[in-house]
Length: 407
Image (tube, rainbow, N blue to C red; front, top):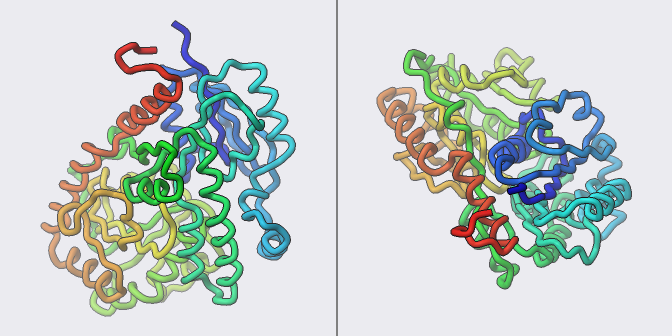
């Protein structure tokens, strides 16, 4: 029997999978390809088009629509002030994308359309008679609202708050156009349901490759290194590091002068590179690496001092899968059904966060216990096979196929 056709739409090329959203799309496609014939349509910026996407194309039919590089701060401010729509809706909408989707929808018998992120939905043809699954990797208006309270420089906060307000108006409006919404967590699902009580909301959580990210029993943890990783163009990640370096790290280094924070991930900002260049900061900028596992297996701990953002954090799932002890804020661990002092440590104030770090440094047995229990929790609840099964169940429901009938 032929596989049902699914159209998947994403705002960026998901290969290589070097950030949270890219990892999500790539791993879902890899898991779902045996059941569905997936056509993936993605925007591709010039820097993304430079990568070889052959490993992705073995799982789907890839169609890439060109998009310019993201605008600078001044142009972004002008775009924000000259439109009632959020800036992301302007950046991720184009005649070329709309024409491409209109053509594909007439050429191929799609049974389901799967869109990642609400701001991509306006690219779809109007009055399309194909059920829509809208997956929300984060609640965007919440991301921007939280960031507006902590953004630096402080004079950027009113502009960010304005974007949050526009998203607060537009995001629920577009949720109402979907037949089903995929939420990353129960927290997100409850929030979405309050806005669109008549729309079906299902869980489609983020996950991790638990066969790839594993502990190494032979590795020794160095007891002086914390790891953080992310895409630093995403403003909550930069803010988390700057906050940690200014408010938490000095408290730890007052007792443990050798303690340092190592940053992994793409596009460190000038502010972060300046920290790395300062020999007294306690921050080392490594940047993008081919394999994060050696770092996660040998560090004293993984820290997640996020103060803004939304959704669930791949970085925490990967760290836990590698058996690394984790210290996180409540925002960082939001949406994950983890328990403080059982799977990780949660602290929201600088003194408490520093105290949690020192507690782990003083008690390696505690770190070993948290690492083991965190690994067991991730394996039980956040393997990609489980997440893909939930997405597949949503597809079947939208196609009107009962599970016992198969496809």
